[in-house]
Image (tube, rainbow, N blue to C red; front, side, top):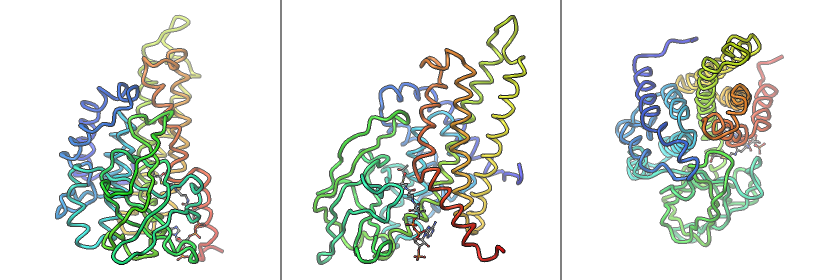
Amino acid sequence: MFFKLTDEQIMIQTMAREFSRKVLAATASERDRTKEFPAENLKKMGDLGLLGMTVPFEYEGSGADTVSYALALSEIAYSCASTAVIMSVHNSIVCESIYRLGTEAQKEQLLKPLATGNIIGAFAMTEPHAGSDPVRQSASAVRDGDNYILNGTKRFITSGRNAGLIIVTAVTDETMRHKGISAFVVKKETPGLIVGNDEDKMGLRASDTTDLIFKDCRVPVEDVLGEEGDGFKIAMQALDSGRIGIAAQSVGVAQAAFDAAVKYAKNRAQFGQLISKFQGLRWIIADMATEIEAARQMTLSAAAMKDRGEKYTAQASMAKLFASEMVNRVTAKALQMHGGYGFIKDYPVERFYRDARVFTIYEGTSEIQRVVISNHILKDKRRP
Ligand code: CAA
């Protein structure tokens, strides 16, 4: 490891590992089958301080740093990637944005129930026709006295059905491009907010992904997050942090697939010897281990930059790009090493392979990460 973890970071990692392997692992494959939202486990995670990790103590959070958060998220993803994505959006995008930009009243009112896990947070920016290009979103928010009236449809919203609070972006001034987008904190029970279609997904099946439909949904002006017109920047900053989360999640799933593959190779005999004796497989194991370690270092390095208050947009995108592509390679190799057994549901590697597939897509596709990274390189005035 390039830098040494502190005692506190190791303690948080160990606590998350024990919870993940003792509690989450037991029912992860059942949840994958039934698509049951892990409500009870999330309550326990709230009690353990895993749902307000970077929120300060004064708002009932854990006051942990981003490195600790990334370590914990990898551990949760190791056993249940569905639970990990709920945790990731909730912590990195929702809690952090409210802590960073909320008014004192918003922080007092919202952070405690979020950090303790009494409510789960969601983030609604994507629309049916605005995914990679959220500037062209069409949901609108029109001021009417002390309220804004929201109309539009948001798509692919993680925890859309089960969240108690949603950060929603909408256009308040269509002449202003990204500066005409604002962010709102909308409580689930608000009239005019309707949960639409639940997606039937290939992976992450215990994490609900839904449409959210806003029909003349009245949101008080006090529930604007930041200033009117700040919504796009708030979303981009939230995604910088979120991308560290997806990288951490990728590392966790890759480690789980790797451990399963190594265990299998050490127990499976063919041609009169354990398959782990074949050089062909040993080289694959070495490559997998090397890629996972590289992704882990990139993820923790981006997290440490964030903790030091440095600009980390490009490094978060690099970590997300590399780790999410790595986990797709690693889970495919792990499945291949299992032979026919990799293709059946008796072995968890099949679920890891399906769960990993979306990591190169959500919170910005690999192609968008390359846009972000190349923009940073080409706009850097210090370069010749
Ligand atoms: N931090 C702060 N500000 C930022 C920023 C960042 N990381 N990135 C951009 N901005 C600012 C720019 O500085 C600029 O502001 P100014 O005009 O004041 O200078 C403004 O935002 C517009 O920037 P761009 O011109 O670069 O914007 P763009 O339209 O070209 O798009 C993009 C940039 C990177 C492609 C962006 O649209 C993007 O990230 N797209 C992907 C969207 C995405 O990740 N969606 C995921 C949905 S959420 C999800 O998946 C969560 C889940 O549920 C799991």
